[in-house]
Image (cartoon, rainbow, N blue to C red; front, top):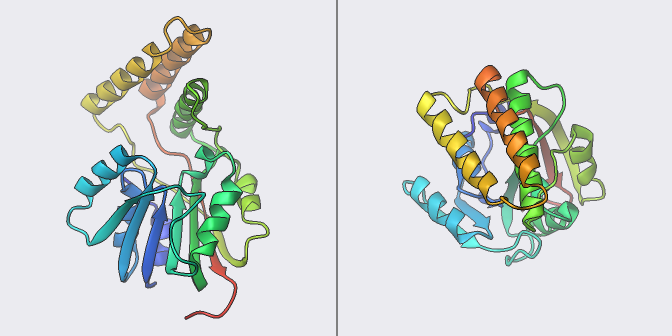
Length: 244
């Protein structure tokens, strides 16, 4: 669930038109966008994991949207179809994020909005550091299991990804989710149990002991400081050309 009041303020008077959310996952950011924009004509969420889309379908059952399985680096949509194309906290999952961004701008209409929201690793509170430490552990476990997942970008690294795209950067700013993500003892227990189960997948592996020790450190940090998502750098860019 996203709050991101700074981003919401930027979207509240905008019409998203035909909206595509790339790497939509379980639909949390798409749900945020449908609420944040003043208007939208259609909403589409794309993800390559059908299990994620099933969860998104349940979460967004009250909204008029389309959920499709697909690859962000090879979007199966016509050129210049969407008025808004978004992606949140997913660029660090792509071996070649620029390729995905080029595809996103291809399907974006001239004058349309490209919206990027991505976690960054700088100037964190202790609770945000706890989240970052968990995220980097999860990334290392994913990479060990053969799934690409890099560590969190810096703000400059995210901004540099949009260089050479056919768009004009309109705004770059930070937005914050300041509410604790594990706001009850039951949620914390469930989260710790999930983390323990993931670590046991590496029992007997060369890095198994390392992951076990890091998981214990993550749990200690969360118990002491809390668990809050790091700041997100938001980039709003307008595709070059005449709007339709």
